[in-house]
Length: 314
Image (cartoon, rainbow, N blue to C red):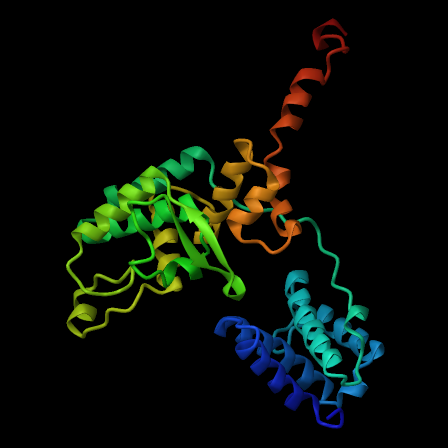
């Protein structure tokens, strides 16, 4: 088995991710891209030839150039995606007793602390009101329900896009969604979200099994009743943000960040927010704490500069 080239083993690994680990098609595609890039660069060696020196040279190559683009480099976070994929592949080989580099010898690139974008209360209010002012009929009802649901639940856009209509019962305050890796979690509906979803569903006359669909007449006449795509939802969120005068780039994930920030600012504990977001690791959730620590602001106001003389007395 170890004599086989890397590409063959990578194919088996991708099939393992899909079938045994239940990873999404998007995740498998991403891993395929990152691993193929390594195999191409290394000229498809046998697994025994994947050494610390080879990976070191690959990391230098990633850090210094982007294939096909001059004077650009790959972002540190994207370099880490390459290394995470390679490390997962090496773990797979180790479990199957294929001789190669031990996965723990691959360290990720050190990055500066991540800063998340979120909406301030006035921006959020303008965005939530935008569909009623800028759209009509079913589209306005649908888009308002989308925005309210994103803010109420913290759903990822991929989780929202394919929601079956029967999943969200507006007579209840919660429903279950399957997140990354097919892991289920419970999310909760605010009163505003329940009202918005109920109004939209009541106004619909189509038979699509999905909660959010296109109301384009041409598509309806062609019998296309599939769900709105994640890309369509991203476009409508960005469009409303621009239309109501929010200058920064706004995506459905910005609403997820806003959901988490709102909870933490109002006293929620980090572990509970981790569960509500569906994060596997608390480290992922901790990215929000640097923008939500109201206690530090209070300490600064209470204690900073209390012993200094007024400037006009100097």
